[in-house]
Length: 196
Image (tube, rainbow, N blue to C red; front, top):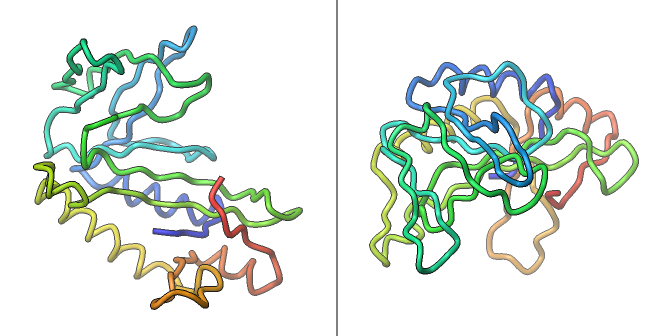
């Protein structure tokens, strides 16, 4: 789901997610020599320009890949208690879940674009849903229900505009633009097409 939002717009989204008791943010508690401590929290005070993982509490434990074929994956039964994981790179803002399909939801937020001076960045919500159902990894029904609830919330809060020229596509991909971002675009602010 492609989104355009300012920091003010994102605050509305953060407040709504904070109020969703079945959803937890996964945040980094610490990082040292690529070893990160992660934990689930019910709410956050502000959104940074970064990638976030959102865990649907009702879907149960998290599967954390070992990255070694001979080492079994770790199971985090209580993500609120936290866990340690080696990061793929320094400064990583969201854990890697590997084959924990369909896995937690991902939200990448940025306001400041890179494609033109002063441009509005593209933000995204991602989730695999039932993409891996054919290999025995269907989405949890409650996670699907909440994803649809998120889509309804965003639909009510935003204006949809075509994301990019789509001459060779059968259907136009739409972007969801929050109110202040829409005002900025109407006043001539350029928007990034690509996510960064």
